[in-house]
Length: 210
Image (cartoon, rainbow, N blue to C red; front, side, top):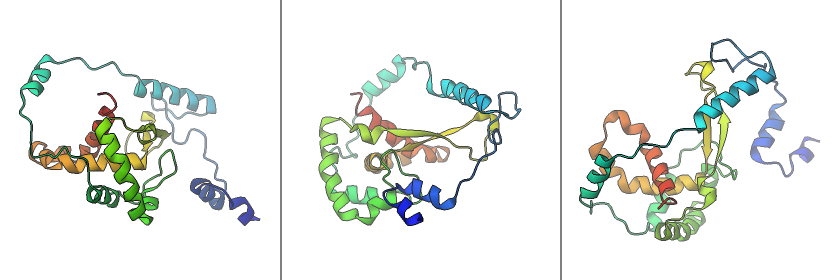
């Protein structure tokens, strides 16, 4: 009976079916701004609405003539190659993906790419040079799924969320990160080490803005 239900299901649906139905106590993980727990579904939805309005709506950054002038006068760093990434770099980027991470919008996990790493790297070796040449990143590589996830560190009133990014998009970000890693190591402080991957993703996003 279970075998019939499992046919055609996606991995996360399958794991949910096998683990059984677990009902979450309403309001147990969501608190209001004043610290009191939400006691109804309406209060939880309202708290989440407030959170996403605050998290996803920001004022545009102010232009800085000083930074623009500094960028214009900075010499070009010839130590970083701007040639299209060869197969070896794509292969290394796939291997550098961390296992056990959630799949992105297309349900592609890092382990899935690594199971067929040679044909996957061969496919990427055609796609990534096109992106490199045109500056246009596929929409699927930029999409993400926003989920509410309490990690047990921040106050429950924060109603924190995480974004499940596209794993193929992460491969491209790792290619960029590997190219600029030497410069980052020379210029950033130890406290900034955790933001290298974020910087690579933002650079990936900027390809579409140019």
